[in-house]
Image (cartoon, rainbow, N blue to C red; front, side, top):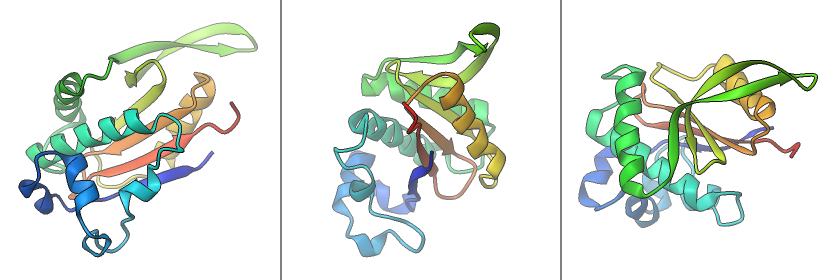
Amino acid sequence: MKSLLHLCINTKYLKSFKSPIQFIFALPESEYGPGCIHFSNAMGNNFKYAEETRKIIGASMTVHRNLGGGNFTENIFHRALLLELTESGLLFESEKELPVYYKDKLIGKKRVDIFVEEKILVELKAIHQFEKIHYNQIINYLKVFNMEVGLLINFGTQSLQVKRFVNNKL
């Protein structure tokens, strides 16, 4: 399992565009800045659930643009993202409890932040920077819940951080 996407967009450019997705495809690559990659290259149609992932990231960018990075707790960003996901038309469940099995026996349940279209796990953070423990958390969730795709989204930085994870064992 590895991260397939690291997206960092300077939100000052977003003001002249109607939607974050329009912005992503309109900017020349030179405008992304150091450490950033061209979104369309990372999220081409050959990725599993590419369209749904684009909508989730677009909704996250809208929230980040409107609330700013690091200004609020994770819970505030979570609630705002739920409103944006509703407007995007995606079906989702917030704080969904999923069963945890060990040796085919139910040993408990774990809540995930957002479960989109019954196929994408979204874990939210509002922290200074990602650490290995955050990557391990979503990787373990994908394994335990037998899911293929997960997004780790951080609202706590000046530029929105998104990591896309794929469970290659499925």
